[in-house]
View 1 (cartoon, rainbow, N blue to C red):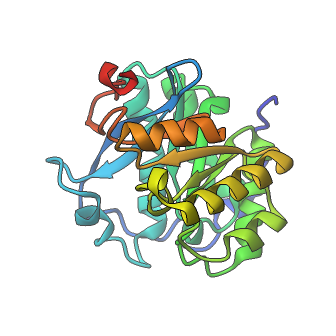
View 2 (cartoon, rainbow, N blue to C red):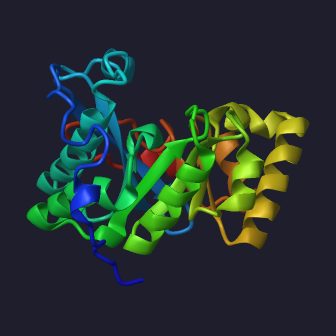
Length: 258
C-alpha cells in the first residue's frame, strides 16, 4: 500500500489540547526488543518499550502520564521511538505503542509521526501502531476510526495483550488489525495446559479466517516455542529470543534455536 499523507484543515491542526498542553517535565528513553519470524529465524520487527532515562522500568514513566500531558507524551513517544530506531540502524519494522485516548483527530495527531519519519528516513510502511487491549478506551468507535485511518495512511496496526483486556472479540468484529499479540498469560506454560491450548488454537483459526497474523509474546521456554510453532504461530517475542536492549537494537539469542 502506498502511504497517504493526510490533508489537515486549519481547524484540525488546532484541535483539543494539541496546542495548549504543557511540555513534559520528565525524561524517558526506549529499549528495543526483537520480534522474531520463527520460520525464517530472522527479526521481523523491534518493539519500542519506554524506559526511564537510566533504564528504570516502564511504570516509572507511565505513572507520570496524566490527562494534562497525555497528548504530549504520546507524541513524544512516537518521535523518540522513530529517531532512536533510525540512529540504531534498525531496518526492520518498528512497533510503537500509542494511547488512543490521546488522539483527538487521527489526521492531525499523525503529523509529527510523518515529520519524524521524513526527518530520520524511516519508511512509513515499516511502522506498526499497537494498542493494548487492556487500555481503557473511552470511545471504542473512535479507536476503530483511528485504526482505519492509520491503515489508510500506510501504517500497520496491532492489538497487544489479546485475551487479557476489554472486549477483544467485539473489537475484532468491527476492525481487523494486521496483527494480534497473544497475552503472555495465555502463552505461559501453554505446552502443559489443555485449556490454554484450546483457547489459543481457536484464536489462531479465527485469525486465519480474518487475515490476521498472530504473534505470541512472553515466550520464555523452548516448550512454549515448540507448541506455538506447531500450532501455526509464526511471530514470537520474549526473553527466549532476546531481552529489550536499552538504547540499542535487540538481537536474537542464538541459543533460542537449540
